[in-house]
Amino acid sequence: MDNSNKPDIRAYIGATGSGKGVSIREHLEREAPTRFLAWDPLGEYGKYGRRLSRLEDVAKAMAAPTFRIAFDPGADPARFAPKFAFLCKLAFAAGRLKFLVEELADVTSPSFAPLEWRRCTTQGRHQGLRIVAASQRPAQVDKQFLGGCTYIRCFTLRYPQDRQAMAGAMSVPLADIDALSTVEGERETVITYWERDFRAGISQRGEIRLPVRT
Image 1 (cartoon, rainbow, N blue to C red):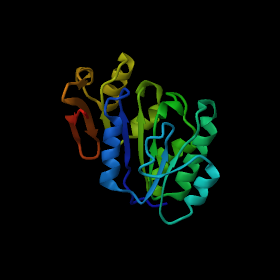
Image 2 (tube, rainbow, N blue to C red):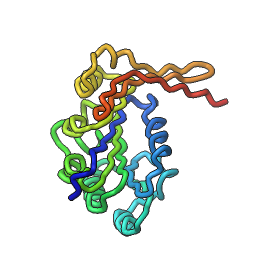
Image 3 (cartoon, rainbow, N blue to C red):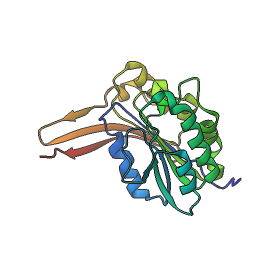
């Protein structure tokens, strides 16, 4: 295992429509990974990787030196657990890739995460894994994941327990998280977020302005 790799675990947290997807897509376009694997239950990342729905096909595709894959686990959340665990196993074994997980609360809980996912988040840097995960409900995801993040961007949240969870995870006043908003105007949508880069020692408020499409 390579001890020289730096940890790179990013979380994008917020209610639906609050800016997570916009920020993740911006990050992917900036980095343009040549080895990319996504757990994509909502079909949002087909632009960044070939859509595959069979894990056998994913494993074959990942044998190539470069690959860009968006895995579709199907429509039945009851069948997500074994599929997610196996995808995590593939990611860890392959190494040197960007691993994106959408809707993390579907496959982890505060007191449980598959062993294969925990291995990715706790030992993945030795394999060269760069992890990105998103969730609408931070109070319902793997606490160990949030505790190990190197970067968090938080958007508006609906539930008090979620806002409290993020204030704690980011070590910022609850009032700063409470103040986040997504405001849709006639000409543009204004999104505010709070971000913390733990490695750079930066904690700050940010803003995204999206023009309204006509």
